Image 1: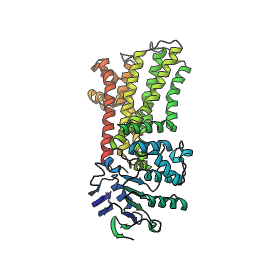
Image 2: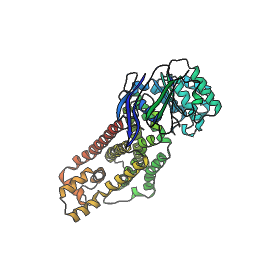
Image 3: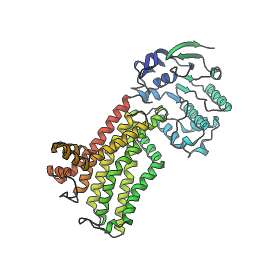
Image 4: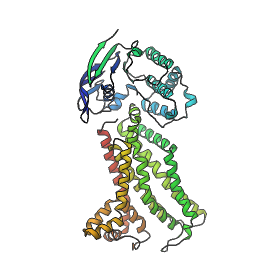
Length: 213
Length: 275
């Protein structure tokens, strides 16, 4: 599904990704780990087509995520580490998601309820005025409702209380659809139960890639 | 097209709720109200009175403040979204960069043009209510000029927004461009001519490039074809071509400039890292 081929990315003189070669396939559930600055977020952003590679490239379902971004992103759900301060109201954000990605609005409501976030009472509030946890719950609900083949979570539980974390992991496990899931995390113990592969990065390289049972 | 309109609509809604939009609308609406209260319509200068005089005053002030208002409110559109990681999330959905960028441009254009235009409409309606003669020709010309002026500075603002990484830098560049263009209207040009003994054609060419100067001369040329209130550069410009031709250029040129800069901004936006 995702092929990273000899990918390097430089920011000025800093080499953030150093000739990375890795493949992620359907039904892989991957914990992507490493210290700060190891290159995890750069790798994720390259997969999403945000960065132009210095050399090498990425293919998602055989497509270039920069040149064919809309086709690639139809099959990808993404939740960032920190919810951005989007000024749109909750209803406008939902409308943006539904109209741009063909997501069923009722599914967003369904997953929000499952994450214990009541959309209806917050519908007309600005997204950025919600609490950190509420924002993260809504973004998670959107990502689940999109039912993508590829889901990418960058520290998705950073703002969540223990109960909400449980809900999140339960919903991920309950989701029956076959998919590839990438979790960027510092806490392996949290995702241990749901991942079948652990990838460690350091200094812009993949230093370890192992299957786990 | 559906996604482009969606982005434009959402940007419009977001802008209308923003504090800057309220201030922006109050400034231009307030200007018109102030002119009425100050009795501009009853005063007479060089034979101009009533609504014509009011519109002339409005345009004179707008020339100076509209560009900086557009620049500082728009320049953070892309760079601000990049700074705050909004772009990272919003572009994780299947929206093409073309739809996102041009949607933002259209949405923002409506936001910056509408208050300036509506203030003028309000002036005309109030003037009619008061029984003043309505200078419709002037109203349409100024609408065209404001449309072109808004396009020019909106395009420049999106260009700056695309090339810089931080919104602080974008703001700094905006102020510089505004001051630079303001300095290169008649006052600075006369000084240049006198001090450097520069070629008159060169000075005129510099003036013609500056959309603020073109806008100023076009706005006043209707009232004062002899240009007795204008500086020498304006006189030279009107000596070179007919007033009608100049008015046509003063609408088409800033419009072209705006589209060109917006297009260049898009090309840079497309080629650069998004976050």
